[in-house]
Length: 326
Image: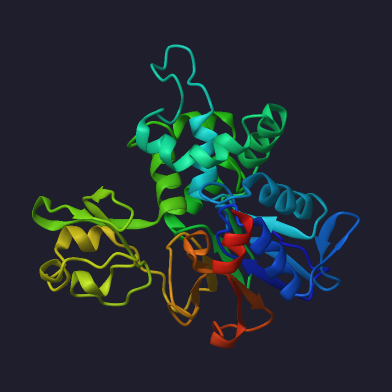
């Protein structure tokens, strides 16, 4: 899947979550300017890591900025789990499927999607067009130097997807099959868009900072020879101390993936990092730094390097911008 050769470099941009003003500030900081209504750079192309929707104050505006850039060839994008959830939430199930919609309309799902649905309440035609655009988003991008996926690069699932789909995009049939838990389609979307996770031992439950009770926790897929739970956890909420020091079981090892340092550079979002942006492995960068939670909207300025350079993360702090947008 060629990603274009007319550009001298790429700017990979993490989860926007409706922070349109912050996105404009970041694009300007990166040297993009608005010409004929579209942000563009004379020598570079932006690549968005997904999760443009949900939670933030200007979701419609953010989507317009990104889609206009993609349509004009000044950006590319991969689908995030929030785009996939939004699409599934508003896609009716097939007759006889027993599903009213592909994603259940329950309180938790509505809570996550509420801002997006409210901001499109008076723009039904816009929403319809954006949902079609979301359905056509690539799930992953790859070229010789680097790879891009929202949450996790699982070669096994990607190879199978390419074999069955003939490319990096879903279609209507795939979307409907992905709604059934346990199918290969469901597993592929879960792995690529939500990453790897492990079940807490002994049926334990942890309460996260956002108030959810969780029986699973997000994990690294680049940890080499991990031994304990603390070696693989990758999420803002720390594990309970007694769990963190427990040894991984054989089942845990079976559920984990490993992205080798011999693989191409990999860029992901999704994981709500905090602090100062930095590589998570020599060849892996997470560029989601919790923008909509008063963190940073982050980009990585990629040129010809073959190892992630800590000095090439660029960001705007979102605290002031969120306040201005609200």
